[in-house]
Length: 295
Image (cartoon, rainbow, N blue to C red):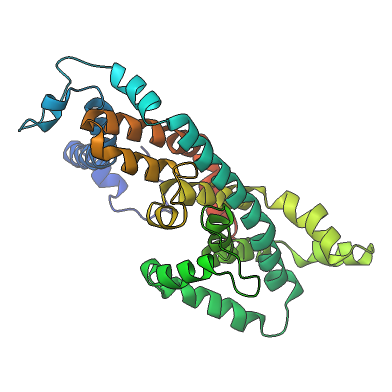
């Protein structure tokens, strides 16, 4: 591992070339990599293997690292007894709606703040970012009051997907990410589109959005994971068994269900988000870093 002569590192070239320095470097690197791997993979491994154990083996102390008698039937029981197909479909439906609403409305808000520059735009952006300082739990009560009696329309949105979609639309963090990305788009392109007679909406559709695919992918992934992992809010606004999300459904059935079957259901519920992350991890990093670079 040769170091560039103009690059400053924690270990100099001379120290790295020595036998002791190289040994210390690789030892520390191995310890860090193995440590972080155990921290992140350990819970997943325990969950996957725990779903293959019997109820007695899960409850035993100390716990076993490997199932003594693997029982893959637990996954089948979890799928059928907890009606996971319906729960996963509900969650996927809510996540899809959240993605569409955020892509349309958050993109429009970020585009107007970045390129159209309305009056008091910076003040509006500052107020939106200030909401990130408010703990989410503090907003539960006012949001719930709004959902059970929607202002002006006086509609009850309980058991309606809009109860999940609408609170997710006004996402200050996603608007900030999109705005920062739009800020990095050269003004020369915007001026050229204006000279060609393109309206702001046409410029957004034909120029800005095609260049913004990485950050749009990041916002979509954030929206999906936010719906998939949320528990308290769907539990409050989706009381009917027919409209529950997967996390609420697993909790509702956990009372009279063996622990190994509940763990198996949790594994199945986690699979979609893990697959999404593994497929789009490069898009996540590129989307988060591209907007921070000015060309």
